Image (spheres, rainbow, N blue to C red):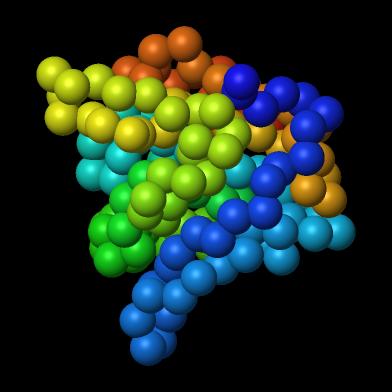
Length: 162
C-alpha cells in the first residue's frame, strides 16, 4: 500500500557522496523537527526528470524557504555517484537540493511507490511524486499517475499547498 497523507515516513538510510565517498544519511535526521519538501522520480538523467521535475524545484527552492520549508530533498533509485553527478549537471546541488540515492530501492518499496517499465529499462524504480513532510509526517502528497508526466508533483504545484 502506498504512503498517504497523515502517515509517518519510514526511517530509511539513503546515500549521498561525502568527502570520503558514499555515506549513509538517515532520512529521519533530515526531517525530524522540520518542514521539508521531498520529491522522488524514476531516474537520474532521464527525460522528464531532468527537463522538468528537478528544474521545477530549483526554480521554487527559495520560495519554499520563504514559506518555512527548511530542506528540499530529491530521491531516486540510483547510486550516490550518479546522484552527485546529476546534481552538479542540473544545478540542483548548487541550489541547495539534497540529492539522495535509494540505491537498492528499499525506501521506495517501504513507501509503496515502486514501479517497473521494462520497455524503458526501468526495474524497481520510483513513481514520480512530491510531498510536504512536517516532523516526519506526510502533510501533502502529490503522486503522478504516469511516470512521464510532471504536473501535480512539480515544484510549483507543491509550493501552492504550503
